[in-house]
Length: 424
Image (cartoon, rainbow, N blue to C red; front, side):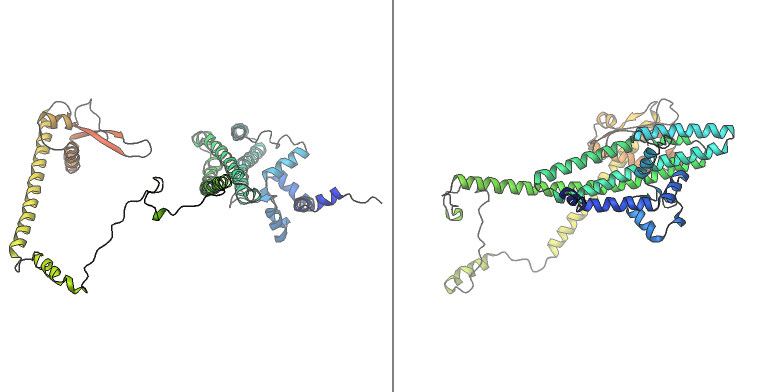
């Protein structure tokens, strides 16, 4: 009798061997129900027990594409059966997103052609294949995201050095970028136009697909946050390790090196002496009898507050009232100048620039305050009066990193001039 070799024993002791054997036996045990699900496009849940369903779902053989959809075979299992049975109708030649979209367009055209001919059996068949194609595409996105989480949670633990961990993060970031590029290929405007007025197609190609892509985008955002956190943590550890390694190399080259007592040295190196001198706090020593006369002189030299502060309070209140009156006067003058500007607009045959008018009249207002007052005056007009004017804002973005726009000038004109357009 042949004895098993040591290499076979080593392979059988591998945890991956037991896991793969368990999954293959699970597929063989439920082969009839799985093949029926392959042909029908969905799996009959009543053909399994609760424990068997849990094992098939946890074993990545079955999955539920959507909460409202029945269980179906995983795309990888579906491809495996198609390859084994040489079923060219369902075998996926290319798993690229662009290939999926081309197949979706072709399948929709076939469905519409069959519907026009009145062939309901072919229409139902094409609809089933189209549904499988859409869920296969979203399922591949889900598998890729799950692979990213697996990379983050397991493969980092098997990498010993920090450099290898950083390389693993860079690989995960490139994989994430490929998934995002796949999302960008999907154009929902084209899918809306492709679905037309068909409610079933719009639900499948637009609403459900968009919901799945949004869900995957949220998962990718969490993955990206985790990647950034890990990268920052590993970079920090790498910097500390680099500092320690170089300090260790320096000590090996200078075995007699001793750290100097820098606080007690009069000449401190410039690289160490970065802090400013500390000024010591001084307090009055009330317990020193010999300083009593000096303390009394200091106390008498301290200026005293007047007993009746009515005069100072009156001066303070008068100054505050004067400031308020001055501000009110300037505000009235600013409102009057803006009112004159609007009167000039009414009399002018064309739109007037606020900045040009300010320079022409030689007014002393700041351009920013002047333009703000013009916009405020325009917005404060009654609705029937506001319709007689048209306001155009000359604004430019402050930065390409935000949505802040700076208003450089405003033009105000009458609405009946056809060559003037308002920008709200």
